[in-house]
Length: 500
Image (cartoon, rainbow, N blue to C red):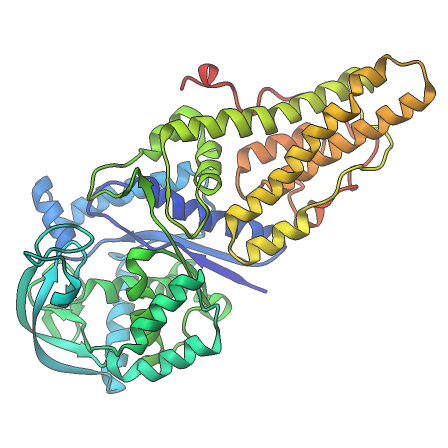
């Protein structure tokens, strides 16, 4: 069965931060896992490049909007590459192919009778690129609840989308699939917004020049969020050079809770209005926080993911963001916490297990896996169940139960003591112990491929099974006796040695 997954496309008003890395890593774990299961996969990420906020940032930088977008989008692309993400396409909303399809989509809505012209007057946050009701703002002063800045009064002639007409169809969609939006708290939040009644939405802007021109009124631009939301489908139409939307649509989408209403209410309504299937599933994750504040560019309290990668490698960052915070919830992240996870779980738990196992097989059995049967229980079925439920943190904890079990087994079996014995029965026990450990390490190389792909490759090469990442290899008892094993250099050098 084909599988398609997207990150939200990232807004280029300033440089990427850890929150962008977080969603990219999560999507890549899903993409890699589904490829391991032999499925056709399309993984999309990219940048959102239109709107007043980008135009203002470009002006402050002394650049044209396009020059500014080219510069910042390249930084996002660089982060994606350095995270070892396996995206099939990196979309930019300034792609001419995307812009043309956005215009076609608006014409389709107009021709179907879902658009009309009217005057809009309301309170507008440029940071959010959306209007707010006064009751949704912080008082006194009509302050944006997200950006903590005053909103502006905006009044202009616009094209409107009849969003109010889709209250019923959206409720039917939600009631038909209680897991359409996950976690459940976010489903309830989105459904409550729909049930409370929807207001028609202005889908054009007279006051914003940096955007996709409205086809029948080119002096106005298409609302940046309509433009942005359509990327998930337009990329399938042109990103590979062939329209693959029939294969990969509908998709699974990862997004932050700050853009829930736009993705979980507006976007499915737009798609249904235009005659498309709505998204397959929407997973809404929480914020990575620093203390009690959201980690965001706007608030300036970010961890630089590129610096972490330079210090410790991409695997360390990928592991930490999904290990430290339950995927879907808010959680605090710090560089000290990352270093502790690196030292304690990657270097000690996993790295030491691989090193001890391969060293003992080299010392006691001339570098060949002996005959034996595993003494440990497999975890791959539980891991797959967790990933299917988009519980990426829970899946990683399931994997770590095998890491801990293997480490306990080393201490309990004490291969070094068995190797000193002259008893033939102990020689057989040693074979079982070494086989069990080699087999567990090999399985961990498969299980961890989505999370820490560089280490996964090195683990599998060390135990003589290079490149064998298919999910059919994730169980135990599959290592072939006689396989050559080599002790690798440390998978995760100690922090002092790593230069951190």
